[in-house]
Image: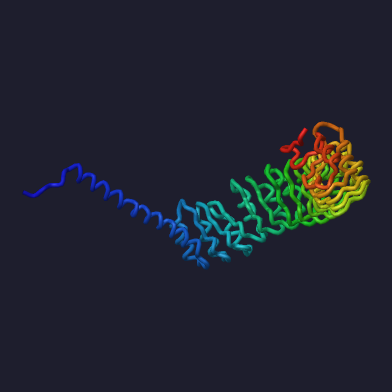
Length: 381
């Protein structure tokens, strides 16, 4: 008599076989999708006939053609029929007729590789798309394109600009509510400064090599981080203006500071970085002593008695973590600080290594001298 496989065991075997078989089918489908997507992304050349085939094949799907570096008017016209997302991030520039044809695209466009944009219809098309518009390879934007981009419905990023002259475009960039990184701009005129100052933003202009008095006066009303780390010198008038910025001020590349400019910057309220200064004389220290907030002087390597006495009574926290050795008289002077509770000095522990026991104890007992981080480190009583 032939033995039969019990029914429960048979069902179990069938279930196991199904489980083992299904992933192969599924992974094959996913591989097919990935293959199709990567295939279009690898296309280096495209004619109008092939473009017309791709559009219906990618209905309701993203069409990735980031491998293209050129685009003719005929191909642009064909691709304009795509109603979903069209990626052309390998295109650096477009002839006017191709740009105007692409501007009629039914779906959203992504052209993050553009280094020039001269077509107003295309600029309008990009500006009217909802969502973030990133054109970070554009080096400059002339009128009337700048005005068109200023009307962008979503967030606009133009981090590659080397120049900006439009008030409305600067205002649009500043209105994003996040950091505006324009590190390639070497000179900023009053028009752009006016736009940035009309919107609260963190403005990073690390490439700025000089600043005129008029521009500085306009930036005086700016609110947020003002990073002018590229400046190596500043006139007293400009210093007085940027010191009125309502937010952190970074002038970390200043190599020297006149007593007049120091006194002007001493009026700033908030965090200020002057880490480019390698020496601090008494007159400059006296001017900076009026600063309210954290003043970072990490580039200063040694501190004279005159400078220390000028800083005593400062209205904020002075970070001197670049000073690696204190003389006894300087240490005793700093320990005499008796201003408000959130004022004083930050030093590195190594700065105390050669002090006498008396000076070392005076510093360590001071509630206004911290060794390390002002917020996290307290001295022994």
